[in-house]
Amino acid sequence: MSKVPSALTDMFERNQKHAESRKGIPTLMQMHNRQRTPDDGVMIITCADPRLNPYAIFGLDETAQQRFPVVIRNAGGRTFDALRSIAVLDAIGSPSTIVVMHHSDCGMTHFHDADVKNILLSRTEDPAERKWIENTKYGEMLGPPEDSIREDVTLLRNSPFVRKETQIVGVKYDVFKGTVEVINVP
Image (cartoon, rainbow, N blue to C red; front, side, top):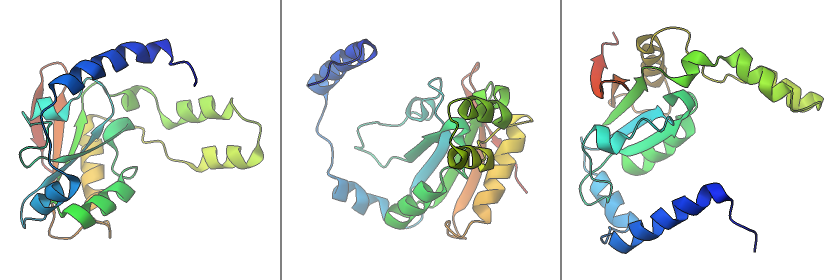
């Protein structure tokens, strides 16, 4: 058996405490049946930034005892990066609302596609890998969060992977104040 990296040791110890206090949770199929209720269910697409905890931000129960949203997280909370998951989760859960939540002080506003490409290109000499890296979009945000929110909401509204009747709401989270603001997307 391989040695556990020291960075994980504390996490595993906290997990032990978590497991000891954990209450019973529903099975996946029980949750699935609850999520199939028409005009109910929320999916949140947001950033992987550890300063964002959608369950805490929206006062949600993490134990899945109540109806709860599905949360998809990635660098920048970009919807183009989440489309496969959105399609799968929409097919099996039928959420009536998708929330696109970007935030202030996001890393994708500080590190742009060119920065990410340069780092990745420095790691390989393989021509095929270099081509793949060059042709990939990494989700940079060149303006304020409102701009990327509008871009991502529009992408979802035009996507064949999202039902046309699904409500799509853009939200900006202020990491310093802890507040959310709905962003109007015409």
